[in-house]
Image (tube, rainbow, N blue to C red; front, side, top):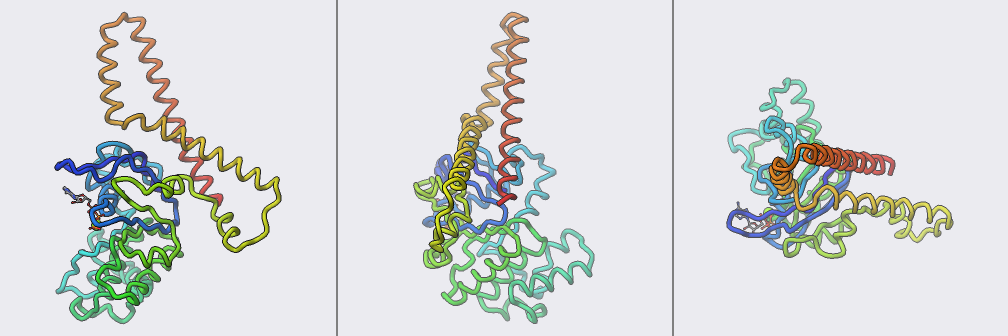
Length: 327
Ligand SMILES: Nc1ncnc2c1ncn2[C@@H]1O[C@H](COP(=O)(O)OP(=O)(O)OP(=O)(O)O)[C@@H](O)[C@H]1O
Ligand SMILES: [Mg+2]
Protein backbone atom coordinates (compact mmCIF):
# COMPACT_ATOMS: atom_id res chain seq x y z
CA UNK A 1 0.00 0.00 0.00
CA UNK A 2 2.85 2.39 0.88
CA UNK A 3 6.38 2.02 -0.44
CA UNK A 4 9.21 4.38 0.44
CA UNK A 5 11.99 3.61 -2.00
CA UNK A 6 15.35 5.15 -1.03
CA UNK A 7 13.72 8.39 0.04
CA UNK A 8 16.08 11.22 0.91
CA UNK A 9 14.80 14.44 2.42
CA UNK A 10 16.76 17.44 3.52
CA UNK A 11 15.27 20.84 4.23
CA UNK A 12 16.52 24.05 2.67
CA UNK A 13 18.80 24.70 5.64
CA UNK A 14 20.70 21.54 4.65
CA UNK A 15 19.34 19.48 7.50
CA UNK A 16 19.41 15.85 6.26
CA UNK A 17 16.36 14.22 7.84
CA UNK A 18 15.93 11.04 5.79
CA UNK A 19 18.84 9.37 4.04
CA UNK A 20 17.75 6.78 1.45
CA UNK A 21 15.01 5.42 3.67
CA UNK A 22 13.10 2.41 2.32
CA UNK A 23 10.16 0.59 3.85
CA UNK A 24 6.86 -0.98 2.93
CA UNK A 25 3.58 -0.68 4.79
CA UNK A 26 0.94 -3.17 3.76
CA UNK A 27 -2.81 -2.81 3.66
CA UNK A 28 -4.23 -3.39 7.12
CA UNK A 29 -0.91 -2.96 8.95
CA UNK A 30 -0.54 -1.32 12.34
CA UNK A 31 2.87 0.25 12.52
CA UNK A 32 4.80 2.52 14.83
CA UNK A 33 7.28 5.11 13.63
CA UNK A 34 9.58 5.99 16.47
CA UNK A 35 12.70 8.03 16.97
CA UNK A 36 13.94 10.96 19.00
CA UNK A 37 12.51 14.43 18.63
CA UNK A 38 13.63 15.73 15.24
CA UNK A 39 14.21 12.21 13.84
CA UNK A 40 11.81 12.79 10.94
CA UNK A 41 8.51 11.19 12.00
CA UNK A 42 6.34 14.17 11.06
CA UNK A 43 8.42 14.63 7.91
CA UNK A 44 7.25 11.16 6.78
CA UNK A 45 3.61 12.18 7.19
CA UNK A 46 4.21 15.42 5.27
CA UNK A 47 5.85 13.48 2.45
CA UNK A 48 2.88 11.11 2.30
CA UNK A 49 0.50 14.04 2.08
CA UNK A 50 2.68 15.61 -0.61
CA UNK A 51 3.03 18.77 1.46
CA UNK A 52 6.76 18.46 0.80
CA UNK A 53 8.75 16.59 -1.85
CA UNK A 54 11.66 14.21 -1.36
CA UNK A 55 15.03 15.22 -2.80
CA UNK A 56 15.56 11.70 -4.06
CA UNK A 57 13.71 8.39 -4.19
CA UNK A 58 10.08 7.53 -4.77
CA UNK A 59 6.96 7.14 -2.67
CA UNK A 60 4.20 4.84 -3.87
CA UNK A 61 0.69 4.86 -2.44
CA UNK A 62 -1.64 2.21 -3.84
CA UNK A 63 0.92 1.43 -6.53
CA UNK A 64 1.01 5.03 -7.68
CA UNK A 65 4.22 7.04 -7.66
CA UNK A 66 2.97 10.16 -5.87
CA UNK A 67 5.90 12.16 -7.21
CA UNK A 68 4.34 11.82 -10.63
CA UNK A 69 0.70 12.59 -9.95
CA UNK A 70 -0.93 15.73 -11.30
CA UNK A 71 -1.70 18.65 -8.99
CA UNK A 72 -5.39 18.09 -9.59
CA UNK A 73 -5.10 14.61 -8.07
CA UNK A 74 -3.53 15.75 -4.79
CA UNK A 75 -6.86 16.26 -2.94
CA UNK A 76 -7.88 12.68 -3.83
CA UNK A 77 -4.53 11.44 -2.57
CA UNK A 78 -4.97 13.34 0.70
CA UNK A 79 -8.42 11.86 1.20
CA UNK A 80 -6.75 8.45 1.38
CA UNK A 81 -4.89 9.52 4.49
CA UNK A 82 -6.62 10.71 7.62
CA UNK A 83 -4.21 12.65 9.80
CA UNK A 84 -4.58 13.14 13.51
CA UNK A 85 -2.02 15.65 14.68
CA UNK A 86 -1.50 16.47 18.28
CA UNK A 87 -1.59 20.17 17.62
CA UNK A 88 -4.74 20.06 15.53
CA UNK A 89 -6.95 22.82 16.79
CA UNK A 90 -10.64 22.21 17.23
CA UNK A 91 -13.03 25.07 16.61
CA UNK A 92 -13.98 26.27 20.08
CA UNK A 93 -17.31 27.71 18.90
CA UNK A 94 -18.37 24.48 17.20
CA UNK A 95 -19.77 21.41 18.90
CA UNK A 96 -17.97 18.07 18.85
CA UNK A 97 -20.35 16.86 16.14
CA UNK A 98 -19.67 19.95 14.02
CA UNK A 99 -15.91 19.63 14.52
CA UNK A 100 -15.92 15.97 13.52
CA UNK A 101 -18.26 16.54 10.57
CA UNK A 102 -16.19 19.39 9.14
CA UNK A 103 -14.32 17.39 6.44
CA UNK A 104 -17.64 16.01 5.14
CA UNK A 105 -19.20 19.49 5.21
CA UNK A 106 -16.29 20.71 3.11
CA UNK A 107 -16.90 17.82 0.72
CA UNK A 108 -20.57 18.95 0.60
CA UNK A 109 -21.95 15.58 1.62
CA UNK A 110 -25.65 15.09 2.30
CA UNK A 111 -26.85 15.82 5.85
CA UNK A 112 -28.22 12.33 6.48
CA UNK A 113 -24.93 10.74 5.40
CA UNK A 114 -23.03 13.13 7.68
CA UNK A 115 -25.31 12.23 10.61
CA UNK A 116 -24.79 8.54 9.99
CA UNK A 117 -21.00 8.84 9.71
CA UNK A 118 -20.67 11.08 12.79
CA UNK A 119 -22.71 8.61 14.83
CA UNK A 120 -20.53 5.74 13.67
CA UNK A 121 -17.29 7.62 14.37
CA UNK A 122 -18.44 8.83 17.80
CA UNK A 123 -19.13 5.23 18.73
CA UNK A 124 -15.75 4.12 17.37
CA UNK A 125 -13.86 6.68 19.47
CA UNK A 126 -16.12 6.19 22.48
CA UNK A 127 -17.64 9.66 22.57
CA UNK A 128 -21.34 8.84 22.29
CA UNK A 129 -23.41 11.45 24.03
CA UNK A 130 -20.76 14.17 23.66
CA UNK A 131 -21.81 15.36 20.21
CA UNK A 132 -23.42 18.55 21.50
CA UNK A 133 -20.59 19.45 23.91
CA UNK A 134 -18.03 22.11 23.08
CA UNK A 135 -14.25 21.42 23.10
CA UNK A 136 -13.76 23.37 26.37
CA UNK A 137 -16.08 20.89 28.09
CA UNK A 138 -13.86 17.91 27.20
CA UNK A 139 -10.73 16.41 28.81
CA UNK A 140 -7.38 16.13 26.97
CA UNK A 141 -7.96 12.46 26.19
CA UNK A 142 -11.45 13.20 24.88
CA UNK A 143 -10.10 16.01 22.71
CA UNK A 144 -7.57 13.60 21.25
CA UNK A 145 -10.41 11.21 20.46
CA UNK A 146 -12.28 14.00 18.67
CA UNK A 147 -9.14 14.67 16.61
CA UNK A 148 -8.95 10.97 15.70
CA UNK A 149 -12.68 11.00 14.91
CA UNK A 150 -12.24 13.95 12.59
CA UNK A 151 -9.39 12.15 10.83
CA UNK A 152 -11.65 9.14 10.30
CA UNK A 153 -14.85 10.82 9.22
CA UNK A 154 -14.15 10.68 5.48
CA UNK A 155 -13.31 6.94 5.70
CA UNK A 156 -9.62 7.16 4.78
CA UNK A 157 -7.72 3.98 3.95
CA UNK A 158 -4.83 5.08 6.11
CA UNK A 159 -4.79 6.81 9.48
CA UNK A 160 -1.60 8.65 10.44
CA UNK A 161 -1.68 9.55 14.13
CA UNK A 162 1.18 11.86 15.07
CA UNK A 163 1.95 11.66 18.80
CA UNK A 164 -1.61 10.73 19.74
CA UNK A 165 -0.66 10.09 23.35
CA UNK A 166 1.58 13.08 24.05
CA UNK A 167 0.61 14.97 27.22
CA UNK A 168 -1.80 12.22 28.27
CA UNK A 169 -1.53 10.13 31.42
CA UNK A 170 -0.78 6.44 31.01
CA UNK A 171 -4.34 5.13 31.36
CA UNK A 172 -5.74 7.70 28.94
CA UNK A 173 -2.90 6.96 26.51
CA UNK A 174 -3.79 3.27 26.62
CA UNK A 175 -7.43 4.16 25.96
CA UNK A 176 -6.32 5.97 22.81
CA UNK A 177 -4.23 3.00 21.73
CA UNK A 178 -7.21 0.69 22.24
CA UNK A 179 -9.23 2.92 19.91
CA UNK A 180 -6.47 2.90 17.30
CA UNK A 181 -6.28 -0.89 17.56
CA UNK A 182 -10.02 -1.14 17.03
CA UNK A 183 -9.85 1.17 14.01
CA UNK A 184 -7.10 -1.05 12.59
CA UNK A 185 -9.08 -4.22 13.25
CA UNK A 186 -11.91 -2.72 11.22
CA UNK A 187 -9.59 -2.51 8.21
CA UNK A 188 -7.86 0.89 8.31
CA UNK A 189 -4.09 0.89 7.97
CA UNK A 190 -2.80 2.67 11.07
CA UNK A 191 0.54 4.47 11.36
CA UNK A 192 1.43 5.91 14.75
CA UNK A 193 4.37 8.27 15.21
CA UNK A 194 5.35 8.37 18.84
CA UNK A 195 8.03 8.78 21.50
CA UNK A 196 6.09 6.62 23.92
CA UNK A 197 8.46 3.66 24.31
CA UNK A 198 6.25 1.93 26.87
CA UNK A 199 3.32 1.74 24.51
CA UNK A 200 5.43 0.66 21.55
CA UNK A 201 7.01 -2.12 23.60
CA UNK A 202 3.79 -3.37 25.14
CA UNK A 203 1.68 -3.34 22.01
CA UNK A 204 4.08 -5.63 20.15
CA UNK A 205 3.37 -4.15 16.73
CA UNK A 206 5.83 -3.56 13.89
CA UNK A 207 8.25 -0.68 14.46
CA UNK A 208 10.19 1.59 12.12
CA UNK A 209 12.79 3.31 14.25
CA UNK A 210 14.46 6.36 12.78
CA UNK A 211 18.03 6.96 13.87
CA UNK A 212 20.54 9.32 12.25
CA UNK A 213 18.32 9.79 9.18
CA UNK A 214 18.05 6.03 8.59
CA UNK A 215 15.96 3.13 9.78
CA UNK A 216 17.69 1.44 12.65
CA UNK A 217 19.64 -1.60 11.40
CA UNK A 218 17.78 -4.82 11.99
CA UNK A 219 14.41 -3.27 11.35
CA UNK A 220 15.41 -2.22 7.85
CA UNK A 221 15.40 -5.76 6.48
CA UNK A 222 12.25 -6.66 8.34
CA UNK A 223 10.41 -3.62 7.07
CA UNK A 224 10.95 -4.32 3.43
CA UNK A 225 10.27 -8.00 3.36
CA UNK A 226 7.51 -8.56 5.79
CA UNK A 227 7.89 -11.85 7.56
CA UNK A 228 5.17 -14.38 7.15
CA UNK A 229 2.74 -13.53 9.91
CA UNK A 230 1.43 -17.05 10.25
CA UNK A 231 4.94 -18.35 10.68
CA UNK A 232 5.59 -15.72 13.31
CA UNK A 233 2.42 -16.56 15.18
CA UNK A 234 3.24 -20.25 15.18
CA UNK A 235 6.75 -19.53 16.41
CA UNK A 236 5.32 -17.45 19.28
CA UNK A 237 2.76 -20.03 20.23
CA UNK A 238 5.46 -22.72 20.13
CA UNK A 239 3.48 -24.89 17.75
CA UNK A 240 4.94 -27.93 16.00
CA UNK A 241 7.40 -27.34 13.18
CA UNK A 242 5.89 -27.63 9.75
CA UNK A 243 6.73 -30.60 7.56
CA UNK A 244 9.99 -30.05 5.64
CA UNK A 245 8.36 -29.91 2.22
CA UNK A 246 6.03 -27.05 3.10
CA UNK A 247 8.81 -25.20 4.85
CA UNK A 248 11.04 -25.46 1.79
CA UNK A 249 8.25 -24.22 -0.46
CA UNK A 250 7.61 -21.27 1.83
CA UNK A 251 11.29 -20.38 1.97
CA UNK A 252 11.52 -20.58 -1.80
CA UNK A 253 8.57 -18.20 -2.08
CA UNK A 254 10.18 -15.79 0.37
CA UNK A 255 13.50 -15.91 -1.51
CA UNK A 256 11.72 -15.19 -4.77
CA UNK A 257 9.99 -12.22 -3.16
CA UNK A 258 13.32 -10.91 -1.86
CA UNK A 259 14.95 -11.32 -5.27
CA UNK A 260 12.13 -9.45 -6.96
CA UNK A 261 12.29 -6.66 -4.43
CA UNK A 262 16.06 -6.31 -4.75
CA UNK A 263 15.76 -6.13 -8.51
CA UNK A 264 12.96 -3.61 -8.16
CA UNK A 265 14.98 -1.38 -5.84
CA UNK A 266 17.96 -1.47 -8.17
CA UNK A 267 16.06 -1.05 -11.42
CA UNK A 268 13.50 1.53 -10.35
CA UNK A 269 15.76 3.88 -8.48
CA UNK A 270 19.24 4.13 -9.98
CA UNK A 271 19.87 7.37 -8.16
CA UNK A 272 16.39 8.90 -8.30
CA UNK A 273 13.96 9.67 -11.10
CA UNK A 274 14.88 13.35 -11.39
CA UNK A 275 18.53 12.54 -11.88
CA UNK A 276 17.57 9.88 -14.38
CA UNK A 277 15.43 12.24 -16.37
CA UNK A 278 18.21 14.85 -16.41
CA UNK A 279 20.68 12.20 -17.53
CA UNK A 280 18.38 11.02 -20.27
CA UNK A 281 17.92 14.61 -21.49
CA UNK A 282 21.66 15.09 -21.64
CA UNK A 283 22.14 11.83 -23.45
CA UNK A 284 19.50 12.76 -25.98
CA UNK A 285 21.25 16.03 -26.71
CA UNK A 286 24.56 14.30 -27.20
CA UNK A 287 22.97 11.80 -29.49
CA UNK A 288 21.63 14.57 -31.72
CA UNK A 289 25.14 15.12 -32.91
CA UNK A 290 25.63 11.53 -33.83
CA UNK A 291 24.79 9.95 -37.16
CA UNK A 292 21.07 9.56 -37.92
CA UNK A 293 21.26 5.83 -38.04
CA UNK A 294 23.00 5.55 -34.66
CA UNK A 295 20.62 8.05 -33.13
CA UNK A 296 17.57 6.08 -34.20
CA UNK A 297 18.89 2.83 -32.81
CA UNK A 298 19.85 4.44 -29.51
CA UNK A 299 16.49 6.06 -28.94
CA UNK A 300 14.74 2.81 -29.75
CA UNK A 301 16.89 0.99 -27.19
CA UNK A 302 16.30 3.69 -24.63
CA UNK A 303 12.54 3.41 -25.06
CA UNK A 304 12.72 -0.36 -24.95
CA UNK A 305 14.67 -0.24 -21.68
CA UNK A 306 12.26 2.28 -20.19
CA UNK A 307 9.27 0.14 -21.16
CA UNK A 308 10.97 -2.94 -19.76
CA UNK A 309 11.62 -1.17 -16.45
CA UNK A 310 8.06 0.13 -16.25
CA UNK A 311 6.69 -3.33 -17.02
CA UNK A 312 8.89 -4.80 -14.35
CA UNK A 313 7.90 -2.36 -11.61
CA UNK A 314 4.20 -2.78 -12.44
CA UNK A 315 4.63 -6.54 -12.38
CA UNK A 316 6.38 -6.31 -9.04
CA UNK A 317 3.73 -4.12 -7.47
CA UNK A 318 0.98 -6.38 -8.81
CA UNK A 319 2.77 -9.47 -7.52
CA UNK A 320 3.29 -7.90 -4.13
CA UNK A 321 -0.39 -6.97 -3.95
CA UNK A 322 -1.37 -10.48 -4.86
CA UNK A 323 0.96 -11.85 -2.20
CA UNK A 324 -0.46 -9.51 0.45
CA UNK A 325 -4.04 -10.21 -0.56
CA UNK A 326 -3.30 -13.91 -0.50
CA UNK A 327 -1.90 -13.75 3.05
N1 LIG B 1 10.18 23.32 7.34
C1 LIG B 1 11.33 22.98 7.87
N2 LIG B 1 12.47 23.63 7.57
C2 LIG B 1 13.66 23.26 8.06
N3 LIG B 1 13.84 22.23 8.91
C3 LIG B 1 12.75 21.53 9.25
C4 LIG B 1 11.43 21.86 8.75
N4 LIG B 1 10.54 20.99 9.28
C5 LIG B 1 11.26 20.15 10.05
N5 LIG B 1 12.56 20.48 10.05
C6 LIG B 1 13.65 19.79 10.76
O1 LIG B 1 13.66 18.45 10.34
C7 LIG B 1 13.92 17.57 11.41
C8 LIG B 1 12.82 16.53 11.50
O2 LIG B 1 11.63 17.15 11.89
P1 LIG B 1 10.30 16.34 12.19
O3 LIG B 1 9.25 17.30 12.54
O4 LIG B 1 10.04 15.40 11.08
O5 LIG B 1 10.77 15.49 13.48
P2 LIG B 1 9.91 14.56 14.44
O6 LIG B 1 10.58 13.22 14.45
O7 LIG B 1 8.47 14.60 14.04
O8 LIG B 1 10.13 15.26 15.84
P3 LIG B 1 9.12 15.40 17.10
O9 LIG B 1 9.17 14.07 17.80
O10 LIG B 1 9.76 16.46 17.92
O11 LIG B 1 7.78 15.76 16.60
C9 LIG B 1 14.08 18.44 12.64
O12 LIG B 1 15.45 18.64 12.87
C10 LIG B 1 13.40 19.75 12.25
O13 LIG B 1 14.00 20.83 12.88
MG1 LIG C 1 6.75 15.33 14.96
